[in-house]
Length: 465
Image (cartoon, rainbow, N blue to C red; front, top):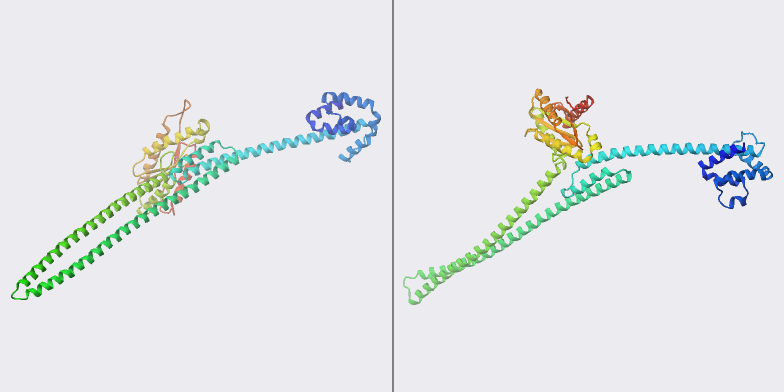
């Protein structure tokens, strides 16, 4: 009996060593428990000696053990001997350990479930953020920083890291907005500076013109005065020698005045020409700067409208193009087809061969799609592995043939990842813009619904709604 109890106690102590000290306090006196740690291997011997040599002391502790047993479960009977008391204590300890073990196991399972759920949420948010980052309009000088954040999403496995990534994107967007604002301010400031320079030049020209006008007026008065004197002298029939000299002098004065006028005109012309040349040079410089700004704005607009990975027009460009085509089709009555194409099982490419293989797949397919459309048609990367085509002026009986030919071309591309040939297929949903469509979103949703139908029917097919 005792050997069985000791074995149970030893097993319990191995499972839950933290109960050693409490048990020893119940069984041994203070000197024994404080003398040092009791070795598990010696515990059996110590307990046997204690039972044999100190039966009297054990009897004295019976009441204490009985009270402990009754306090734990009042419904139990009062033990009749120390061994029975010890059995009761051992039984309660075993129950406690079992409850502790079950609770620990449950907590471990709950923790595993929480971690699994968290990992799933992180994966979903990482995918959503990747698609979101690809559609963000940001200053072209910050594109590389945004691409770094997109790439860093792959290595994120905690919510703290995910939030940190989002905070960095927000900071990047704010920086982009401030950069665009600063560039706009500089542009406006430069324009105003140029305008002020032109105003100053014009004011100088005006001042020179006024000075010239005053000089002309002075010359006119002098000339008129001289001519008046000459007129008076000419009325005399007979001229004396003195009069003759006077007339000659007046004529000389007129010649001098005329010569002075010529010199003044030349100087004024030279000054005016200099200012005109300066103005023209300034205008040419302003025109050149304006042309440069215009080119930069066009370049920025093109960059903002282009998907950085595939070099196709992005979602923003699609929205503008689709709106224009939609309005034109509604007004003219000409056909406009909207096709949404999605790469089948694209996630498995990223999972099995890496994101670089997925990026390369997108680039190759984007190039093949772009080379397969007419000049009048339009294709854009909608996001992720989805592409949208706008196909105008195509008969009803031709759309299925055209899109299936496109699908077969993608299917025939010889993809190879890690020395393994992989066939890539497309699912395509397409619809025709209807007169009853209130806006382009109605048409797009119908094409998107056709795409999901193609997916449900087995992928690698074209469905027309």
